[in-house]
Amino acid sequence: MPKLSFWSKKPPVSDALRALSAEVLLNSEPRRTRLRQLGALVSVPHASFSHLYRAPLLSFTRYVQQLPAPETDHHTYPGGLLDHVLDVVVTALSLRRGYLLPPGAQPEIVSRKQDLWTYAVFAAALLRDIGQVAVEQRVTIVDKRGHATGDWDVWRGPMDKGMWYRVSLVRDRNRISREPVAPLFAPLILPADALSWLASDADVLSCWLGVLTGAQERAGVLGDIVNRADAASIANDLQAQGPGTKDVDIGTKPTRLHQPLTASAASNPKTTNIDQRGDLEHDFLGWLRNMVCAGKIPVNDMNARIHTVPEGVLLVSPAVFKDFTAKRADVDDWSSVQRRFQKLRVHRKTRDGANIHRYEFSGIRKRAGINGLLIPDPAVIFGDRPPPPPNPRLQLHVS
Image (cartoon, rainbow, N blue to C red; front, top):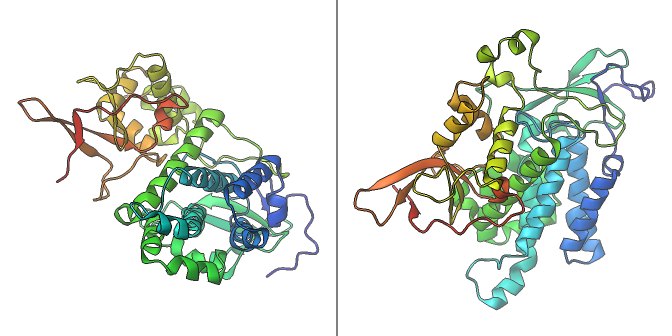
């Protein structure tokens, strides 16, 4: 490891980021607010909170540093991954208060297990996306002249405080997915006795591992809570941020990882490469929300593009994406819009890993159905307004 004594606080290159202590990284006002909210949501003694909650948060922060959320178009600024995970943790713990866990258990069991299930929510929300650090981002260490000295090996521990580094996305389509990697970080982030506590209950452990590995059929209600929190964080960032960047007040210059639209592409919008447009999915989501708010898109009608269902909100595909494409002179491929929207990960996949769900209408002679993307959290589409009641004529098709 290189000596750090000669490294100044000035970046050696414009896009370099500095490895900071967890205390410094968490010292911005929005992050301090999140920590206060976390403390208010967890009813445990101070010593237990410091050991079980604050210590893992510090360990997680040392690992993720100022990394952005990779690949998707939410939280793409330096420190975005940390902000996103803090949002998910606090929102998930808030949602947890509305559940009696384990589901269907006797009151005395619910009372005895409530702290364990609360901790499972926290640990699942904290570690769910940490696999991104290992498989979706490349962190290059640079010296005082800006020359690369090697890549950070995430498995050897966090970066040393004071080091400078650059971040790039790993675009190898054959790379291992983030989900199987996430549980490997658990012993590096959580205290050993916390892991033992999670493993003491087979149902808790199964659901917790289901969330971390992306196995929705095993994640159960724990997966529903974390997925709702994840979707809410993404939706809030898209609504507040839109295309662009923001500064997290830790002394770094924000950067954006996707490539901007080139001058040649801008001069010929019909031939624009859709994958270069970082704002297309934002535009679609904004258009959809505005249309719903203005009552210009029917909901739950026979030919509606949006249906509320017990599982969330169904966006009828490809119809709703074709409607959006028809309004845009610079986009002529609805499937590209859908692919970009899917990268936001606000939808739930089927048990087989497919993106499209099948629903069938009941009460009519001829069997009819519709296909679409299932959004578990109605707030992604309806915001703070309550969604309409679920369409009673629609049922999820089970093969």
